[in-house]
Image 1 (cartoon, one colour):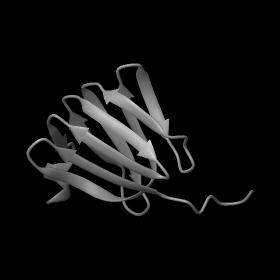
Image 2 (image 1 turned 60 degrees about the horizontal axis):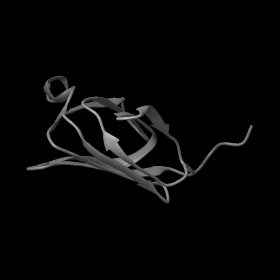
Image 3 (image 1 turned 120 degrees about the vertical axis):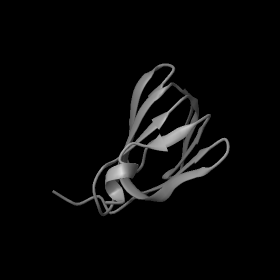
Length: 97
């Protein structure tokens, strides 16, 4: 099996602050139409983001979870942009220990 070398460039911002950006192999989110998983090579998408949890598999490091209160979700050319009304990194407290 060949390895997929493409990666996603992910950027997450909230209305009033920067949340996270980096390279990832997968992003999973809840939209108004249901859950969506994004892998490298995904077709372009623009969706309304529902309140819930985002999951990001970074290229290196542990899975990152982000709790959002809604917003929108855009995918184009392996770039994922998430603009949330409000967002907090789920493991912020444990990452600083």
